[in-house]
Image (cartoon, rainbow, N blue to C red; front, side, top):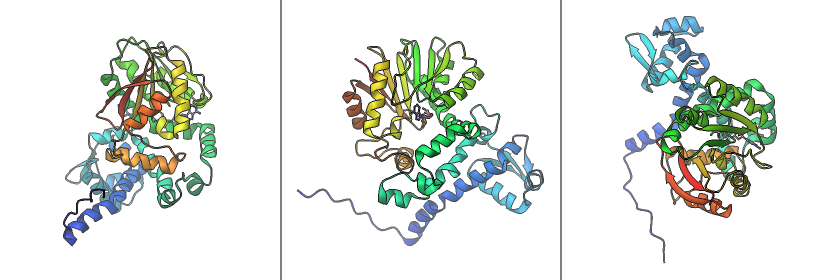
Length: 351
Ligand SMILES: C[S@@+](CC[C@H](N)C(=O)[O-])C[C@H]1O[C@@H](n2cnc3c(N)ncnc32)[C@H](O)[C@@H]1O
């Protein structure tokens, strides 16, 4: 039987088509305005109070006329507010400053680090492989080895992870009932952004951030800064070699499985299984695709992000694909909770 045809829709007018396509092709110009504003220190400078383009130009050594154009562009995107000739940070831009409650300025690494790999998307789609060599002249292993050896770059990378994982952790802390549990371990938890938020919200919880040694050092600083040193610790362990630290009855795995192919995911899940007691919970925090592999725009985009950055086979997965991986490694999948954040929550249990 022939498969059902894709519904044919009437062709839009040339103007409608142009409007839609023009919006698509210029979206990166908006991103670039954001990156430039971060790079030039505009949000940081405006944290001190509203200013005119001429004043900002003088303080930041920018030409006042292009500075004014950039400020107008940022105002159009909702990042600045304008009163006459003076500009101020909008409430959301307050997150782009050094003293923000959750610093989000590191998100501008999308315009430095990631943009270089995305610019090779044509070849990634042709060849089905990451773009490290093409974009950076180094393999992924070499690039990460260099990152782990460079404290300033690693701290910056951890800042990017935390910009995502802290808000995600705040949502997760509300979405899952931690009352029956006592110790949470975030496997490959980066600087600890996600589980520090669980620790803040659930005073009875103890926690372990597991990652590689140089990342654990940064996690320790974040744990101390959050006042959680009595209850939370970092422990280094290798994701694949294991064994993972013992003692947790909940494990969180956020933006880990999507980095790896199915064989490597099974290795990670088996290590999680071995580290948990019977009845222990596994919380997978990923953008879970729909059965037809569609998803939120960000989820679909991240699957391409995995294409340009990670090994072939790394991708965002559907609930059914996670269920298979979980059952193959002894877990029972319980529920998918859609969260009001970039990533969802899949709850699984060790029987
Ligand atoms: C994409 S980040 C996710 C961080 C964090 N879970 C989050 O949601 O923000 C992947 C993490 O895996 C860690 N990682 C990579 N390879 C690892 C390995 N072999 N053993 C332990 N951790 C590893 C990295 O250091 C990094 O912190």
